[in-house]
Image (cartoon, rainbow, N blue to C red; front, side, top):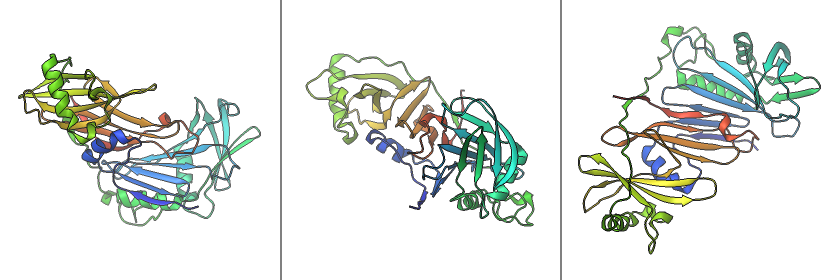
Length: 340
């Protein structure tokens, strides 16, 4: 069954993340067609993944391509194999479009191999054609990356980066000067401020603030705010008469999910949700990660002294491809974070 999907709005894998990711709405282009996936972030850096055809003939294999925006940028290529019991460190023989393309060296777990510039160039010539399959052979084992959907993916990448009709285009080369390719947009600059130390407020404020937070529809499932129990709620000063409030929403066996609000330091608290899907508080960053064994998504936010702003968001490769979710992060949005 063919898939042709163009996504330009955020997607999350758990209910806790719906409010926060929708509010942030970082730019992204996620294009999926057949056995290929393309993700381009706000700097127009594009990353693509091609997989083996889902026919059971080839074991799990993926080809990862990346290219920065701007004139003269080359495509980087890397092969991944998730078959530790058969793939061993060392050389493998590469074929592109049915032609021998030399050797690559497998290393790591899952095993991966970087392609040379010449091999990456051969890929760009073969993938849009009638037979652009990429085959890796090691001993008596063979892995094949499907070319189904590759031509559409390369065309979309060229469109996003403004390369169509130039010598450096991956799909439709032409005589338009390479210098006419638009430069990469700059990532926004965010000056991160430290987060406050959190503490349990005095009992009267604790229960009054918990009651105010319960009126937020996104707090409906937070177990730390359940009526009839002592709230699992901490606060810390943000300055300018504001507090950061943290409540435990879900304390499962795998991870604890927390929600954060900006509230007034005194009644009326007027809570404003920051995120309801935070899984890690790392330095000055609020990290939200939603993952299954094979795919996931994530968002990072920092406090800039006025508000919490998204500085990084990502998704993984396609679900059901038998690769661990942590292997690739395909950024959908990136900011440059500095400390004053």
